[in-house]
Length: 317
Image (tube, rainbow, N blue to C red):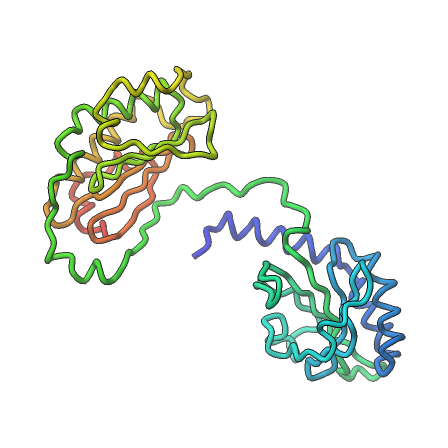
């Protein structure tokens, strides 16, 4: 399920595209109706209209059966590649007749370029109101204007079930002692130090494979992998310049060791259902957990700390 904030961002963008179209496609369809039997006339109309439809990549016309009867009209001129193509089975054609005269499709992957596209379809009717064709307008998502800002990530607790094959064999497995398990008295304080004093804003501990991945605020596009030897060596702090605790953090620094302590408890609480990996992002405040059943959870740090241990045995999958 797409989070509501993400849905709203998508809806705003769709509304923006619809507003850009306005009555243009409706009026253009009316003009095309008069020349529906003359491809040259229709293509001339499309070429003239294209300059008035912002961000539109192609215009084209189909007959009542969804067969394309014009070239694709582009800003570089006519493209005959799709002339005669049957578009009736494309996603943007489904359910339009009998429900509405205008439809803005959901995004789909184009056949040839394999890129996300949107298509607006306007039914063409003659003077008697009879359906005689379709007008199509294609949009490449790369070329559309962006929304005003990124959508906010959901803070609601999310549980995602994992691989059924792993879940099916859950009770035939048992936690094996990892190298990280025996060195948490060094590793957890070291991770705390990196996050509070050396600019690490996101850290993930892979308990079962004895490694960690970290992201630094000053170089957020690159993650770094720390193996068990590096995690056991406090000298690695010398490799990361000291940085003040980021002002973007919403997790109080004193809560970081409490989160890590909960990771430790979830790792050892049960030999069958146990924590495989856990991460903390101090900027969005989210804790992620992946259990032996391959179930994953995403939960706010304060909600995570407020829950008792008993709840995880029943909800880890």
